[in-house]
Length: 298
Ligand code: NAD
Image (cartoon, rainbow, N blue to C red; front, side):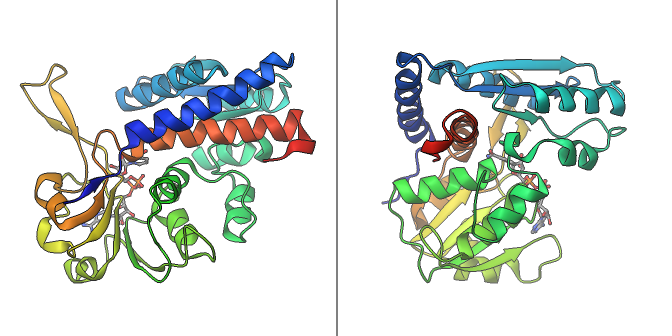
């Protein structure tokens, strides 16, 4: 029988831990940590993600600010917003929700974010610190996956780990983190992508299989080893006329067929997505401590 890696329950527990810390800070007369989010345009998925981030801030007692601008904003206007957030002493960390509309230069924006406020962990400085084993802000989704492995006490040392998908926000950083010395880590990592050959064969060898592809139900039961740990990062909208919104969310893993073969598996929704938001909160708390309580560095 498989065990569910329950992102809903775990994120609730961690949020309660954060809320207790925030209460202690404010009880001593301090201000709460403050996260700002920049949302450009009307992309429905981005709007939903940002809403959930703002709601989560409220749940733990953080202050949050949402800066919304239309999709036709100029690069210079967006850069000005980033500069103001960098300089605003009341804001501990901020994110610019991606993807940005096509006319905007994402790289220029990410490079302009002050590394100490980059709670998404996407700035090259933070990526470099992570790669060298001196982590400051880990990117939220890999960080959320590490916490799941850790809190469920899943052994990782010496395990064969296949990560499918090499994005800068999920697959590539996770491959670094799971191969590093320490726990969770010490895995033998293979990073697969769209040009990989013999994917089913590689997948069947994996003790830990992470799917971060963006293709509904691509991972089928015949690709999974008996007893594997399966982490499904994919969030895909599939049409469903019976659903209130006309669609439902599914992962990259065919959960119904794969779960019976697993020792542990994440559901979608209710898995990695919720852990991602919690990780953003943890990074913001860390940013707050680095700014306001440097002697108590997390
Ligand atoms: P991406 O969309 O930037 O890239 C997809 C990756 O999948 C690429 O590296 C590509 O090489 C690989 N790929 C595509 N087709 C493949 C194939 N047939 N075989 C093997 N590899 C293939 O990646 P992303 O931004 O990491 O997003 C991946 C999925 O994860 C999406 O569904 C996204 O919505 C989801 N996501 C979820 C969270 C979360 O919090 N749960 C966070 C980020 C992304």
